[in-house]
Length: 503
Image: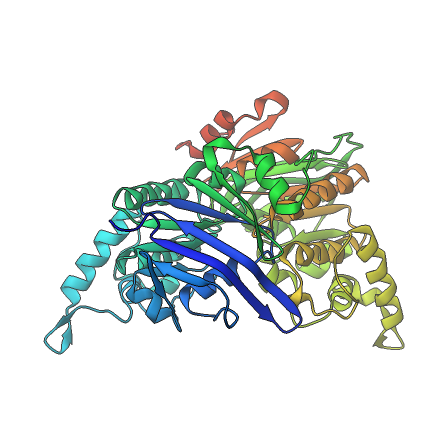
């Protein structure tokens, strides 16, 4: 082998109108190596990868890319794929109407004469799915698959294409712990076969688990290139944001002042059964379980967007009926949903309009929206939440993920909530913004708001919650407090097979 690095990107610059996205960026990748690419949203990670794959061109006269020691220029993703460079982006690009097999081998379907060789297609697809330990069938229509299995199908594309360099962008964002473990086993097998992987993630525990090296970027520039097992989390964070985080997690004081919400025997066929729990004023109650355990569905029922078969809901000791989200809002219940871009925000509207949205009935004057009132509301939460936005009229879709999430939080704080449900509030957010969100959650609880936090990240649940309820297969399986909240107890509680009894 005449080269040490299968890939070298040197002194890469990229300028968009008014923005220097990359400034002297580089990346080196050895055969069979996993390099984690880290940085806050807007650091330049995706731009660098899009230049690698031919989606973007670097600035004229800027740097070079060497593949197996030889200069290359990719003008489109197909050119890169011919050299075995495959990008799997976080946003799924599957054709929902086609089968898993057709999606995985799209553009390279096996032929038998002039026809598709369906037998070979399904056999080859099954081999790839088996590598990822994915239970989907090659013939399954993608639209019928859970989002986690769709993510696995997307990743399977890269394996099927015979990738030599595989770029995985937030690959576990929709995966359960079990599916993540299967993915990591597959990555390790690819490493042994000489495949190199660039792994982009905001989840620091994953980076330390799967990578050999960590390349950190900030403001389009490399700020650190480390051997993973020689560094600490604080080293990475310092390179990412230019300072130490100090306390990464923040926990509310837990000084409860009385019950806000109590539910008894909530049931919705196919989702959850006989669910009972309560949450106190000033408390962060964590809900932990595998994807599909029923956590989100319970909260949707409490918020009035999913119909209950039976069960009772009590607010401040009084039974209430919540038949719609409007009923929930009138009762001062807020719900920050898992998918902020599709369910939490109107991306083409301004920050001011989004923050006023849930409270718009109180923002009217003469039958029209009182813009002065919405501006005042925006200014209050812009300052309180430290939202980084140049103006109230900034289109919210142009903000970073962390600032978008702050806008959603502001929207629900504007109703003066007594109960706030947060479903995966830090998904897709960089490490610095995550810490700010954790601090904000603690502050809201300490101000007297009852918080329910749904999270699939064990460190997050342990670091932020005052009390934890675990779920499996639609049933509550454990209620843990204090020293009971350990990794072992959490894993044991979400994996039990007989989940009909609270342990």
